[in-house]
Every structure is written in C-alpha cells, then in structure tokens.
Image (cartoon, rainbow, N blue to C red; front, side, top):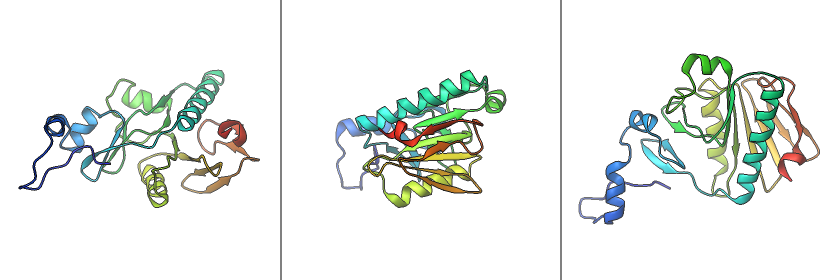
Length: 195
C-alpha cells in the first residue's frame, strides 16, 4: 500500500494525508537518510509494509534469538538486527531479520541511518499480503545488492527457501535449515522455527 500519493489536479486530498505527504521523503536519498517505520522505498515512493501477523512476529523473534545467540557463542562478531533498513538496487528495504557482519560494521559502522547495501544474510517472513512473484523478485534484488544468502519463510505451507548466488534450497518441516555462506555451522530444525 502506498502511504501517500499526489492527487489528480481536480481531486481533493484528505487533510491528514496531505500533512503526512508533506513530511514523507520525496527521493530515495531522503528515505535512506530518514527511513519511515514499517515501510519500504519502492519505485519512487514510500510503500507500507503490511500483513504482519502474530505468527510473523513469533518467527521473526525466534530467528533473531537463534542467530544472535549463535553469533555470540561462536564469537563471530557483527550484529543481528530486526527491520533495519538497507539500500538495494534503487530501493530502500528493512528486512525482517538481518545479519550485519563484522566487515560491514568496520566498513560502514553500526550507527548509520541505512546500510548503503544489503546485509550479508537476510530473512524475510512472507506475509499473507505478499504476492508470489514479488517475493522472489525481492530475493533476487537482495542477491544483486551484495547479499550472500537470503532465507524466505512460508508460514502456511511451512517451508523455508534458502537462496544464494549458486543455489536454491527448498526445506520442509522435517528438514534442517543450515546457513550456506554466512554464520558457518549454524543449523536448526525447520519445525523448531516454524512451529
């Protein structure tokens, strides 16, 4: 859903929306400097991220904890983040869960408004409002923006799709999900994440 748009010349805009439109970023650069919560910058406009459910939040939290504990226990460095914005190919995206690797922390710091590229590892939890084609286009967008690995979570069908530049893996509830290029040695039962 587009948060605000320009009305047609004869169309009257709701005063609340008009006030919001005045403060929304007008360019990608403005968005990256001051990202709007629960939104993305797509095709020249701020688009609301919608459709998150309780299950979505539960999986997001569960993955955040598992990845963060693994990073800490293995002393890998870096930071696991939730909905922290990054720049992709002409877009601004806040992935559901992301790993900011030590080399990216060293290169960009950990206090920038938006990471100027994709994170090393990203997870997106598919919402009921997401379309199939757009889900895979977003994964390809991340992979074209310096990411090494992306995990897509399909809650209703209980699948995880892991994609890197070299491979695509579909994992069912009975399988074990393992990182392919980032967080070496991390593994977890799909059923543990999606139950």
